[in-house]
Length: 132
Figure 1: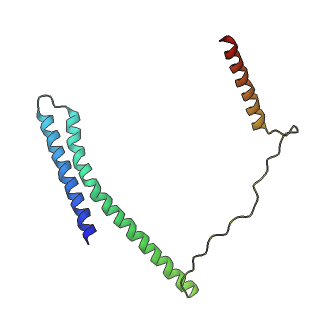
Figure 2 (figure 1 turned 30 degrees about the vertical axis):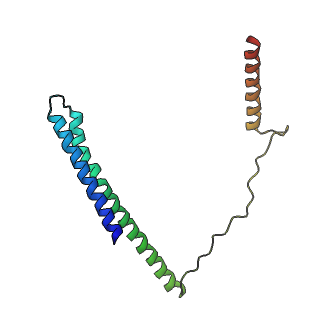
């Protein structure tokens, strides 16, 4: 129960602080140097203040859905097999990775392109060193 009280207090403090900031932005908007950007902040700050409460509500809702789904799966497994399910790890595939066919010289197309690019870079480096 203390955790719920702490969460409620955090949500309340957040809402009060953000409403205070919205009030401050409203005063700035009404002043001579106020802009419509201040008015936009007036509308945004209360939403920021409500966000922690929304997240708390959303997390509780998702947790309840997950618990209900787990209970439904457990109940269906018990009725299907007559006992509680046992956690069994999924089997690993034992298939080897496919090997790509290579060129007659032993290099793939990709390796040949990479080798050509590396030679080009070496030539550029040699020219740069020569010019210095």
